[in-house]
Length: 392
Image (tube, rainbow, N blue to C red; front, side):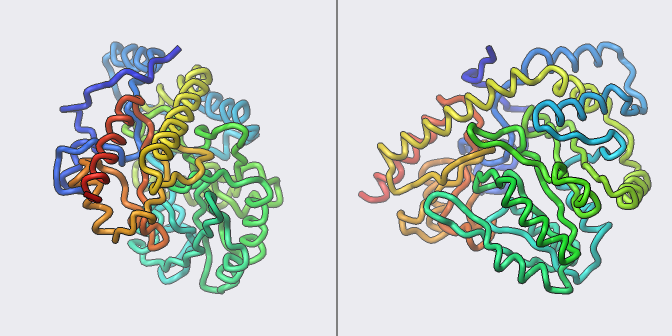
């Protein structure tokens, strides 16, 4: 059994979640429920691996050896039914890095790239900063779920200027686990229109029953040249600071292009601790993930019940995956600025504002529930009190 209720003091650890609150929210005295990392201490098998490697005392140039690839392919096969050759897997420091690389290598400035807002805000930023044009296939909210607008998606894909789609699967922030039929339809539309489909699957381990993740790496050989999957153990095992992502590229010419660029940037070598930890979490982490997902689902149910009983005007969107809960706050009838002020200056909470994820996120907030439940309760109590005071 792992202890997810233990509160860990992260002061003086250079944690972005804490140290950048003033930069992002204008004050440092907030409960940090924004950046997508977890407040749980790593299990002993991870800590011991780092210690054992540190005890060796030499940290020179490091290569990813066959056991690393065995661990990655084993995890993909055993947890997700993904059978992929080691040659189709390549390292990247992070998933956002990988998305940037795919945009830069396989599209040209001025071309259009499809995203589906409200979506993880680096999607829009990296498209625009790389001088490409966002083509926004906005998701449709249906009751407590979001669905894809396939008619609009097909129209955008048919635009000759459109050459790529960035898919978020499972979706951040709306928490959807896209089903196989949905993903196949997306892939068919993209393939028919020569749109390269890039799938960010970083949350693929954090899925709640009865839902199951279906990877685009499993679409079949007829899509091998048309799909690239980007993922990592970083969200699952809370190791974003160790830079441990990887991509699955079955298109050999594209893989050669990517590897050449990775080498040119001198990023093809392994971080010694990242390599060790990626291998061990994929070899030994199955039970930990099962318990983690159960705890996160308990936190989700706790927040749902708390809001229904105390703040019914805030409605959580149904959460099928991730630990990022999308809160519908529109019944409060506040502008984006007023909603931000309520959370930050009245409730003293740091959440990701919905409008950061695109115009369709206005009136929403994204809550990180990957923390001890006691921390969640304290935060919700603060919010409850702030709303009562706002209403007099």
